[in-house]
Length: 177
Image (tube, rainbow, N blue to C red):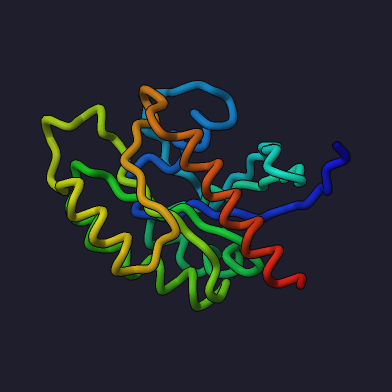
């Protein structure tokens, strides 16, 4: 079958230290580094995902979550087709800040599909955000899907990115009809 090639811009947003870069590296390179190094500005990764009749070239923008990057972050959000909002299940503050992140996304990218990911489930003994609160927040904010994942072990990481890509393709198809 001849697939239609499309390029999609996906952004990964959330507070600094929630594991955005680790989720991307786990998905793209199938690796995990335990040393925390904050993203300075942004990084871009490319992942090809075949879904239905599409060959999606997902450009994944890893945007620094620290406040000092707010101004540049805004320009990088423009033109996004989808978003993965990430919080750390062991850090309730990162969960409380989700609405701010969604506000930034909506302001600069419009109403694009997003999924909500609670990361670091491998650290469950230090959990501050119960899974049901994450599920409720996903519904409240209008997320396409909700996952709890672990960049360290890889649990649900690929599935989350696949569903993010599928939601973006569905959004793309609706806009081009």
